[in-house]
Amino acid sequence: MQIGILNQLPQERSQSITTQVLTVLDAARTAGIRIFFSRHLSLPIEVAGVSQLRSMMAWQRVTHVQEVKPWFLRDAPGFQLIPELSPQRSEVIFDKITMSAFEGTFLSLALRDCGINTVIIMGVAMEVGIEPTVRHAADLGFIPVVVRDACGAGNEVAAQRSLASLEFAGDAWLTDVATVDSILKP
Image 1 (tube, one colour):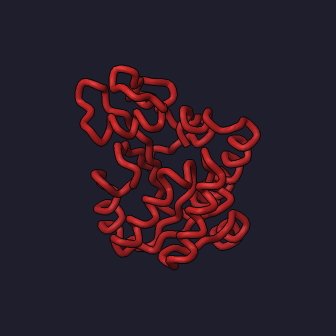
Image 2: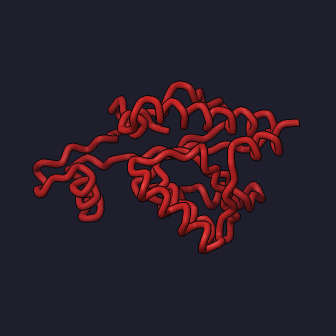
């Protein structure tokens, strides 16, 4: 739910996903559920390694490292979460440089320390960051719950493949905003 990621979607789709995410976020806050936000961070070219540079080149459709422009540097406007989320003091924002929110972050430790074994996952982009996060969560022994209609994508065909693959594997529960809202709100 970063400005620079949502700006890549058509405005109507971005607004629709934002509305759905805010509905679940409100229900989670009402239920007193711990909330963690992730942000994708681009490393500056001077410290980026092969994996980071390869990913940036692929996403930017360039053939030389010199052509790469990191989109999500810490001080770039696109790095920030959309203002509509309004993270509260009791909520956590963490940065990641990988596709999975669990790789190289404190997320797994923080969840386990709280005795949490189920995670509700939503945001953008299903085919890029959400599917790897869901698979990684399952591999770590968490029960991932994907809120399908609160997940956006840069490529809808790839996102549908991701959802079909997750459904086939059976590692995650797939649900919708109305179901989550009805379960979490009194």
